[in-house]
Length: 634
Image (cartoon, rainbow, N blue to C red; front, side):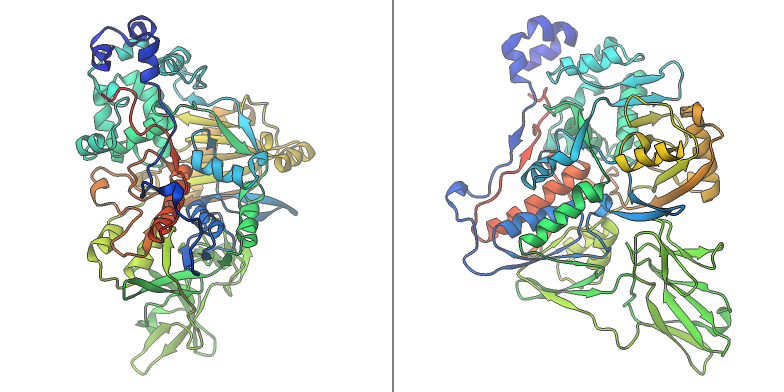
């Protein structure tokens, strides 16, 4: 029976159960598939290059590690450059001193979903799947007491019965929400890369959903859309439909996911880094990519610098503006700190954190500096005292002239290392990519403009708290929540990871992590006030913890997830660029294939490696994906 007739007929429940029949149901089931290869005779092509080929990969997150791994396996000479002290990107971690005890800290909780085919395949191949355990449910806690806690665990992956399972489990959603086969709700089931983006990319997701029944929006669509780290009313409707297709409607494996047994560094990043080195890869950490240098046929070399260094040329300020305490000065995106010494001379430091390049602020409590992104702290001399970095803030020359101006500039003895290669993969985050491309003076103006047009979503917050009171046993260690001003999810680490379970037992306490996925501009207020509000929200969510004392905490507000705003898609750069030997990888690139978050990062890294393999006439690796189209595409 034709799908058009299925839509035209009565309710989806009756159609699925009777009119459609077994053959019709089989025809519309989402299926795992594999992307096509560049060459029809891919299986006959050689595996390794005939001569030595060099590749530089910039960015040590999942995209960069995946690209490096695939190319190292094939005999390429790969150098992976990462500005932080460890690889991992948003999976990286560091140690914190919790009142005398060293504990592992990370960027936040991550779920490894069943349909992360490329990421899970990479973990399988590296022998790391034993470092994970399944999470048995995906619950959402609503502020509205009429909704309470909704469970979105599927009893089946068979479409459309997976939808019925959600409706059956959701107290506020009815089968009547499916009563208009031609309404917007059904558009979610008709995802098609070309048609969907042509028709819906210029519309924000909130506007798109105005013609969807409100209970369905409030209970299912908006809470899940928020996990894209974009505001509902600033999120492309086409990107939102792609998101739902990938995570639910086009996914044959359901909503199940795994979590790491230990912290992400122990379970994933450290063993992956070791295997890259064992394959012959050169891993350079604590060095920042500054710019690419173009040559005949594309990019010729990468120029690097010390993390946090500023190489944009001298910057002068009036000497009268510099006091005896550290004073901040901005020059465009560059931040400097300067002060006048007792002998009348001047000192200056770069204001860029040596971990990930975030601008540091003055720390009133210590007289030093603090990074708001990942908790790095420095003393009054710029030496690190806490957090993920071990590199001091970069010292600059500060020279006064006869006109009473003080000029800041890099130290003369500083050398900028360079790497030459045949291919380059930029797998950094959006701010890092934009900085590199802007400084590179590439002749391909279209590519430069497309990178400049990228954006980052609103800031997000990760706040981990060590409390002096035990948390009551929870059904699962992670909850999405909906309806509060800041808090979007809670992870109960003291019921998740052995190290934290042990701490909780010994101290009769608990460790929880609160996330705010996309903080609106009007809610970016004083840190102390945000903490006060989020703590009150935690007390509402888990009343048994009300009044518990905070023994230690790590608070970070970051802004590095990609923006998916209406109209962004058309000019968004893809994996291949106008520069013949330059490729991009990361969760921000234009990707017609339905994938998001960690899977998009891993997939684009593997596709970038495939593009290099194809350029050398070598066999490409298979790239698995969820179904490329929605179940109701005709």
